Image (cartoon, rainbow, N blue to C red; front, side):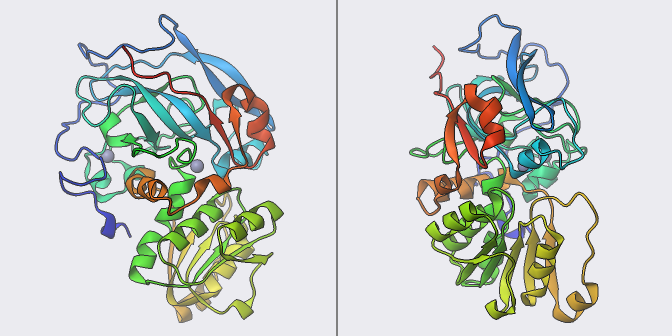
Amino acid sequence: MHGHYQLIGGGCSCGVNHASGVYKGALSIQAGGEAQQPATFPGSETIQSLVFVEKGKLEWRERPRPQIVGPEQAVVRPIASSTCDLDHLILAGRTPFSGPFAICHECVAEVMEIGEDVKTVAVGDIVTVPYHMNCGTCDRCIRGLTASCRRYPQHPHYGLPLTGDWGGLMDDLVHVPFADGMLLKLPDGVDPIAAASVSDNTSLGWETTAQHLAECPGGRVLVLGGTNSIGLYVVDFAQALGAGEVFYCDSSDRRLAIAEKLGVKTVRGMPDKTLGTFDITIDASVDPRGLRKAIKMLEPEGFCESVGIYFQDVPFPMLAMYWQGVRFRIGRGNPRLAAPYVLEAIAQKKVQTELVHSGVYAFADAVDAYVATEKPVFYREPLGKAA
Ligand SMILES: [Zn+2]
Ligand SMILES: [Zn+2]
């Protein structure tokens, strides 16, 4: 489905370093890399990391300081971090993930150190960091499947206990194995707070709508909300990308009010047939009934996307889908693919990501605010370019 957005071509504006990059081993020790020295925490061998301990409980713990051990790597310092909707399910004990592990996988960061071969970012740059590891040069990265980078078949992830311990994006410092492949500098004028979720949730808004609206300009869009932010980002991007009527369905007063501010029609609870049929439906409800509605309210051969995660199998109305014709996608987002388009939309004020946030907090307040609010952003000032 990503054919329209291939990253092929050395002159591409996406920022992925297509032209160079013989793989030198993300995790192997590279001697002689002349890393630029960090501007902060000189001499400290440990950093502070925000750790999910158990249901409802976070705490700051020490972890080893990330080091550059290869010429394509970077170390970054998160300055504007936010919560993925998944984090709130983790905190509520509604996922298979058990603590302790470093949490958080959405941030804008300041580049603190780079390896000698890094070309697209410099120390002091303010960058978006994808939740996933990716090299930027393999065939899958070049196709835009950045979350499925061939270098990382086991899908390592910041802020989740999957493969390896990469830390979380609230940590003091974070290791980036492929700086050119992963990081993208924010355009001038983009507020780091507005871009905090480009790492994941905001980018899903673009990724679930852009290609379908390109194929179906002015299409009617139905969004079934339910998680803290994703459905609202979808609404925002659907409008920005030229959708016709957009309906947002949810049972949350807070999210319905935001959808109204975004200028779309809202429905409390589940939609019914009186709304008609839709060219594009996005299920962000994490509720099998919402998914079923999203499928059954489609136009013939319409597009249905499911975002959010179902941790159990969910029955599908296969016979109805057969008669109707359904193009269905589910899967992890590819924020490094989406980032250039999403940041451009933010820079041009075509989307209003700040409306989705539930508040801006200091990093020091994270233990409480991360749990207590729906879509917090944690901010601290960048330290400025190293001398
Ligand atoms: Zn996520
Ligand atoms: Zn790759």
